[in-house]
Image (tube, rainbow over all chains, first blue to last red; front, side, top):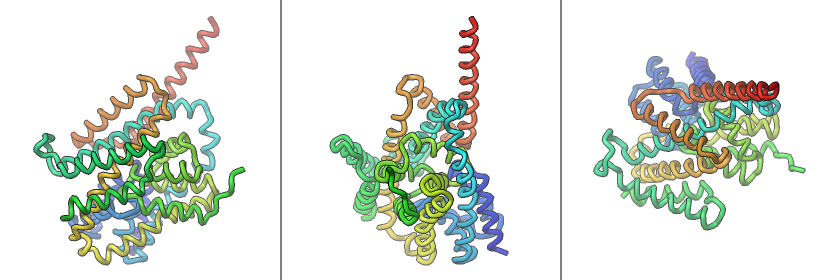
Length: 190
Length: 194
């Protein structure tokens, strides 16, 4: 039965993958292809659309694959499977977290974990930058750089950080996203 | 005294966050900082960082983990469920619609242009979010060298195509932190007995 199968696959992915949406892609791909849910080309299309529509990547993928294999009900079951592990685990942690956090041992561990989290975020930024500025090459020179993205990056960066400096309050992320979408259409669509 | 957050408010807030989140993982952190910390005051920056650490160290998508945590903190079990629901509804509606018009969307140059722009904005927003989080750390050379070296290591592994899960780094860091803590404890004790 496809609904049970969808639920179990997404439940186990939610339960066993660390690191969020991008970490799930390879596992999800293996599952979807070996179960014959879709072709590799369709899967790749799904990922690029999931990345570029609003909503967390993981939830978008669950809805997409669910719809493809089992219609609206399939999408519901897959989303539910994806959500449940997080919901249960985090609720348990939240219930006991506050007290455990004050413990000197936890604080000692957190002190060394914090720089690691910063490095993980910084690595993500570098990775995104690489994909943005050098979309399809392995050589990083001035000839292969994507100039249009670089110019847009500098413009948006100036707007965002300049606004923060001048107004002492950061520009709302939604405004930057709106501006970037309009500029993107002007630069890339025509 | 703080006003109690309604379940409806939790639902609507996370719905809003979901609508403006593009991509996965850290892409939602800038919005969470702005809406949950700055505007609503549901968390402090310090708590936000701790939640990110918990979310990174537990299975499941980071966005879902954060929504569940914030929901629980404000309104318990029901709060968790409503916050998660808020996060899931936009994905569900939008993707179901897109599945119907898949081919038109795939070939639309307007959508392609808008998305190329948004991807650029995400890089800047996450960078801004990182600067804010780094401010919470002790401002000494040791910390910055550690972050720099770790970033260089992780990015090199990335470029070489070697997949190392972030959780491995987190667990190693926790063990080192605990060992240092133990060592400091031991040295302090020995210093006392002298």
